[in-house]
Image (cartoon, rainbow, N blue to C red):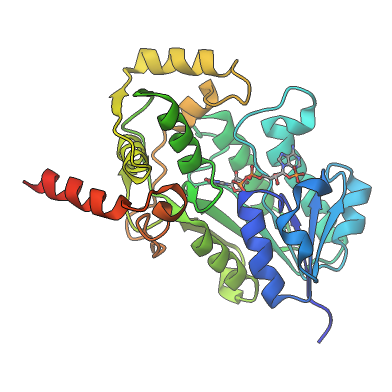
Length: 314
Ligand SMILES: NC(=O)c1ccc[n+]([C@@H]2O[C@H](COP(=O)([O-])OP(=O)(O)OC[C@H]3O[C@@H](n4cnc5c(N)ncnc54)[C@H](OP(=O)(O)O)[C@@H]3O)[C@@H](O)[C@H]2O)c1
C-alpha cells in the first residue's frame, strides 16, 4: 500500500491539535500547514507529523502542498474578522480559502476532502456573517466535481484548551456579577474527541462521501445553563444576570473594541440561531460531566454539583 498522507489546514488550533494527534496514530504521514510553524508545538514532537509553514492563500504554494494527499482536511475558521488583510476577513478565511483549497485538491488528485463548517451555516439565511460565509464555503464544496467531500457541522466544541468553557471560566473568576448576553441562546456542546473520531472514521467510509454530518453532544442547553455549569465546575459562586436584548447589543458594540474582541455584534447575531441538531439526528456520546470538570474543575467539584442538583430537586 502506498504512503497514506493527510494534510491539514487550520491544524494548529484547538480541534486541529487533537485531530493531528489521532491521525498520526493511523496514517503514515500528517502534514500541518500553518502560517506560523511556532504555533504547532504540541504535535511537532511526533515522528510522523510535520508542521510546514505555508501561505495557504497562495494558490501555487497550496497546490504544491496538497498534491497526491490521501486526504485534505480544512479546519480554517474564524469567529472574528482581523483588520489587516482580506485573507483574515470572514469571506477570505471561509469561502475565499475554500475555493483555493478545492481547486488545489482537484488539480492535485486528492482522494478525500473533509471540510469543517458549523451547525446551521447558510449562505442565504445565516443570521451572521460567520454563518453566511461558512454557508458559502459549504456551497462551493457541494458544487465541486472531482473531489470526494464530506462536510462537518458541529455545535460548539468542548475539550481541554477549548475557547468556550475556558473563556467563561476566566471571565467568571474576574467578575462577581456576570452580565450575560443572549442567555436563552441554545447549543448542544460536542466533545472534541467525538468530533475527531467521526472525522477520521469518515475518511475511509464510502457512505460519508457527499454527506453533511451534524455533530451535537448528548444534551441541549441554554447559554445561561452552560455559564452556570462553568461557575459550578470552577467552584465559583456568581450571580449571572441575563441582559435584555438592547443591553446585549450594546455590550457587543462595546466589547468588539476590547483587545481580543471577546464579544462582537456578529457573535451576537450568531447566537440568534439555535446551535442544536435536528430532531432524530444521532448524538455524540460524551457528556460535559465526563470531561469539563477535569480542566475547569476543582477537586471537590462533583460533590458540590451533586449537592446543588439535590437542592434544585427539593
Ligand atoms: N471550536 C468550536 O466550538 C467550533 C464550533 C463550530 C465550528 N468550529 C469550526 O471548527 C474549525 C476549527 O475550530 P478551532 O476551535 O480549532 O479554531 P482555532 O483554534 O481558532 O484554529 C483555527 C485555525 O485556523 C487557522 N486560521 C485562522 N485564520 C486563518 C486565515 N485567515 N487563513 C488561514 N488560516 C487561518 C489557524 O491556523 P494558523 O494560525 O496556524 O495558520 C488556526 O489554527 C473552524 O473552522 C471553526 O469555525 C469550531
